[in-house]
Amino acid sequence: MQNNILICGVGGQGIVLTSKLIAASAMAQDIPVMSAETIGMAQKGGSVFSFLRLGDGLYCPMFPEKTADLLIAFEPAEAVRMLPYLKEGGKVIVNTHPIMPVTAALKGSSYNGSEMLEYLAKKVDDLKTIDGEAACKEVGSPRALNMVMLGQAVKTGVLPFDIDAVEEVMKKTVKPQFVEMNVKALRLEI
Image (tube, rainbow, N blue to C red):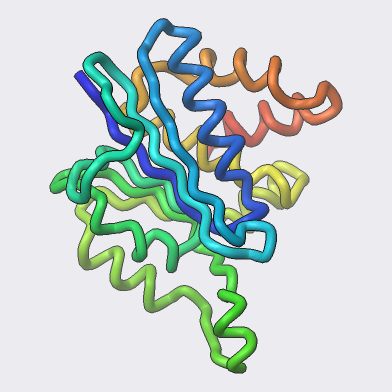
């Protein structure tokens, strides 16, 4: 059995750390895993995405369109951009808080993400929206979005491990002063 997961968002949202935690959690459970990130202009708010494949018989970290079991989207427009990778019956978790693309800001365009969320609602049968801004306020840090999204991803049942496995790996990965906040974000009930 293989699972294809695609994580997407913009630079600074914690996509790469989320990908590494999923990969490390899989390895800790002796599940083969391959991953590849595309970060491009991430430091300038550009698009970031990570492909993850978990399971036996892996030969490449990338996977073709219409084969992702789970799309974890930290930003609505990025979810729409990566939607062609979702397989029929696949699951999507999306943060509803938009981040205006640099190009739109330079043009003076408006963007609030609502059109993207409406599009996703029409196209995806198994869609979970997360108010990431409210969740981060509840946790007490705007930097907790990645752990909130990761916790929700584990709850889908697509990932072949539980929240305890992710928490154990996370505690070994993040700085000690951030562990308590990250545990709270990971286990947040939404």
